[in-house]
Image (cartoon, rainbow, N blue to C red; front, side, top):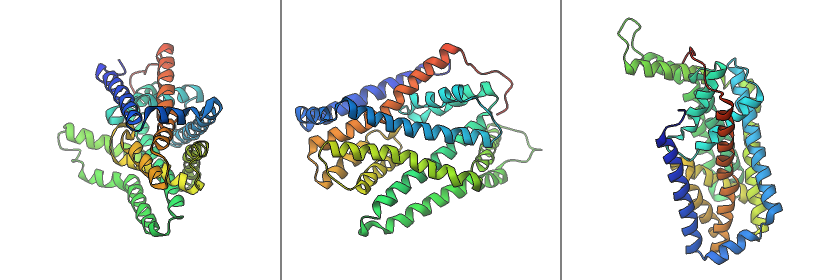
Length: 321
């Protein structure tokens, strides 16, 4: 099986806990008022929000294909798209095992696990850069917080150096080839392979267009939040909307919780309340955003995985790590 029973249980538990959390959040802030705010979005509004999320997913998939191509792999768009979107199904499970599912399916196209993990690591850095760019853009409108911008970019620089040059450090830590191999040496070898492949994904010519495209992808979802706030009569500048979305996303990421659950919602609601939004409206906006971004991605991922399994696109053997 590609996913263990524990994985499915983890996904189910996350779904139930999230649903209960949203429900309790709504009841605590007045269920009727929260539901009334959600109804103000209407079907066309939801369609626009979902469309902007699709723009985000599409641009990030183009980036994924670029990384694989840079490492010498040409996977047809249709199966690669299903594999990529399928990874979203397990975004909310502990450990982000969805990426492991991508690696398993990509082996059928002779993509080593080290290369698919290198693409994953490169994606995470590019996402951090894109979201940080939105946060900095929004923070620039707050003169008292501009000093934090420099700190954020220093952090990104350190992460970039670690990904691009980390394989050299790992190589020095690796035991000599003349010494017996063990689990530790095997792990170091795999990490070295992944970091070496990651370096390929950060060629200046590739970064020059992939990183701006990533920022544009996240800008689509940030703009969705801005539109939603307008529909809910939370009037603010688009820079503030971008700031709220980016900071909430980073808070969720640094909380190290699956899918940023809890951390993202708390920060987003808090910032909207700070801006002066009514509590039920702030909660409604946050729930709608998460449903049309995170949980929409999970739903698409489950559909993609079901198609992959039905087509029996299982990996061939004899693929290098």
